[in-house]
Image 1 (cartoon, rainbow, N blue to C red):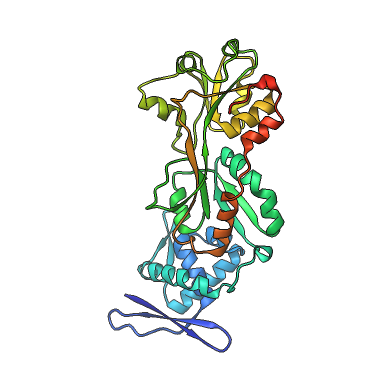
Image 2: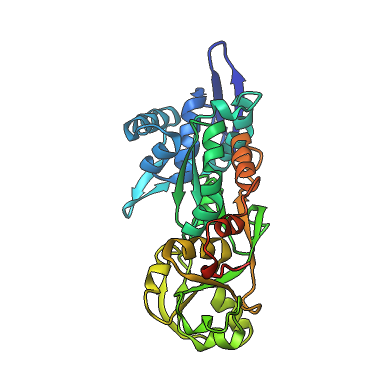
Length: 342
């Protein structure tokens, strides 16, 4: 069992780590900055990832690890099959250090939070639709109130929730049903589905502004699959109805999909915010999707470890508040012939 005690000295914060097993005596104090480095190293098990997360160089982290090894008389992390693995001592320290870091992080932060003085890089997991619908509209406001705030966008991955828990990702924005046991979910907006197609497509001859389900299934489709698991919202809706469509091309990108329509008879289903935007950019027509292709909610997900972090809370608030009505915005710049979906 490992116990961590904090004591304040005149010039710095020091940590006493005692191992209460087999009569081991407490060792000499370790500087709090080194303990912070160790906590992150034990979480990431990588000098390069720890350095990136801390915003320092890899040699700096390597030197700190050397000091920690000397102070604790243990390697803490060792190479195993091309990776870094925790020693027994490192494994014993991992959980209490993570708890200590979570407890003291708010203690060491300024009492008040000001976006104007925020100097921090956030990592947000999002699809290109998430960038279009959530980040892009709010970026001017974010820059205006927090000019030193920086955002790295990373694609969805199979381990993104593990990265969220480890602090490697700050916020996930997506349209999947959120699991409240995994992360705190903040609703952003409700979205509908629309279909884009070439302006002289036979489906437009009737002048209808929405497709029937029968017509929807009768024509070839360009499909969009999201994330490492290849999730397709349309296929999910069709599976619930035991229906199928003919997929001509399947791509993982919203931005690339409209280019594939060209002069073909293929139709493309996507969220209405994106559909109206791309219909204008590519001179395509846009119709409401059949009711059978249901809409969805879009969410911002934050892990329990960050839900009380003032900076993360502020960025989540920024992404969630004041969402412009992109559909209405697209309509203002649309020509009547485009038949934009409502």
